[in-house]
Amino acid sequence: MPLSQNCSNLQNANHGFFGFLKIFFALDRKTDLDQGLREIERITMRSRKIVLKMNKTVGYIIMKTALISGITGQDGAYLAEFLLQKGYFVWGLKRRTSLFNTDRIDHLIKDVHESNTHFNFLYADMTDSTNLIRVIQDTQPDEIYNLAAQSHVKVSFDTPEYTANTDGLGTLRILEAVRLLGMTEKTKIYQASTSELFGQVQEVPQTEKTPFYPRSPYAVAKLYAYWITVNYREAYGMFACNGVLFNHESPIRGETFVTRKITRGLAHIALGLQKKLYLGNLNAKRDWGHAKDFIEAMYLVLQQNKPDDYVIATGITTEIREFVRKAFIRIGINIKFIGNDVEEKGIIDTIDLNQFESVVGVPPAHLSIGQVLIAVDPTYFRPTDVNLLIGDATKARKQLGWQPKYSLDDLIDEMVLSDLEQALRKKYLKKSGFIVRQSLEE
Ligand code: NAP
Ligand code: F7E
Image 1 (cartoon, rainbow, N blue to C red):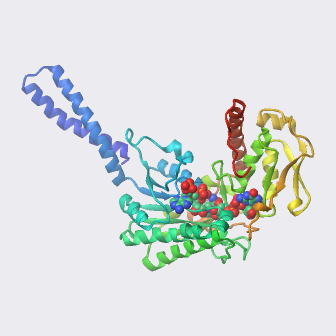
Image 2: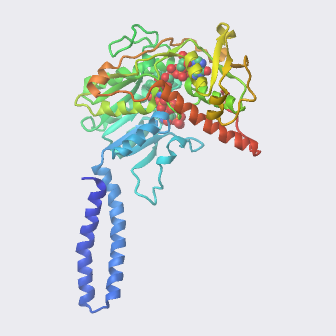
Image 3: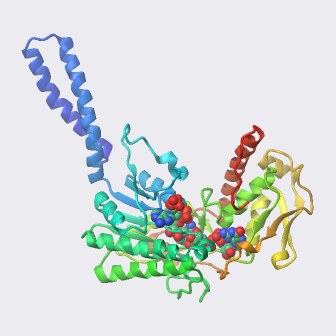
């Protein structure tokens, strides 16, 4: 029975029984009808408050409860929205930050004091075992989605120990908390594993059987997380699964991942807020999907009868250079790449004026043929990079019934339009004399 129906039944029962008694006594004491009605109103209000309180407690017991670590991240935000729509009670784990940092989930947040919310936060850090044990004990989740991670591959070379602690040991802490709390029968665990595990690929395309060859501190930390998840499943019979997800992007992707950096840079260039976009290794190829498709796979992984590991990918790979071209074509700019290595440049080959104006809203008066829009900055090279990723998600298609709905062109379209909208806002602010901050990677 849906919770709302359940509560309205409780409410009716409450009104019916107590209301009847009160009216009976009021009439019996020969008080007037007005007083009787006021009494009914007072009781109705009180029972409504009780029902609201019960709704929270009962809902908490009746509804499936999901605990998502990394709630403020791209996937955490989409997954929370998805699970709320499915009728879950969602707890998000958020680490303490000096600013709110809830932009991606602001639309899901309600005032906990005033409304009957099914979404709530708890402070937690993946480096703090006691903290994780307590939040798991307090929330008694049916499903844990462990998405929290220092997820930037390049940054992992700068912060290898922290990355290992958060991404590797953090996963162990969650598994161990569930075990120590005696919740292995109750709680299913999803581990956010990654195509970065394949690194220097040993097979093309990559499947669940392809051997791993990690190429960064991030990937090595995730390798530990992958195997400790498998080990806890085998050793303790836990419902613990790995989703080996290939790159997935969206308009709310972090701004320093290459796809978002490109669509954001493009929007700034189109509106005259930035002159050039500096990138690193243009030769790398990635199998890019839409995050909305990929979080559905996470959910499906935990709805199976048996725990298992799955590759989630689109099966199509694209070079960084080609992603740049596809994105700029969307606004009518044809980019041609000339030169080699660090001297390589992306210049404007042609401009479709109508297309530019219809998408961007203004003519490209500040742009000209031959102008350099893309340049290489070796700062963005990695000591070791992953050059080719392409996944084979046959197992997920067959066993989970999972299939991506978005094509790469759909994804690029959504990202470009969203970043143009944000850049336009920035432009208006700047024009009106407000200080517009410059990001680190512009
Ligand atoms: P993301 O946007 O970078 O989000 C990461 C989340 O983890 C953020 O909420 C972040 O909090 C949180 N976090 C980081 N360190 C933490 C710590 N020590 N304690 C608690 N929370 C911490 O990543 P995403 O793209 O959503 O990816 C979700 C997960 O999937 C990650 O584990 C990632 O490694 C993995 N993955 C991603 C992809 C992909 O293409 N997106 C592919 C395969 C696997 P703040 O907001 O405070 O930083
Ligand atoms: O890099 C090249 C870069 O940072 C993709 C994470 O979500 O997906 C992500 O990791 C490629 C690399 O993603 C720039 O060298 C060129 O070859 O967008 P990225 P990633 O490293 O693949 C996996 C699956 C995860 O699990 C991770 O958490 O693009 N590249 N120029 C650049 N990359 C960046 N960031 N910035 C550049 O300027």
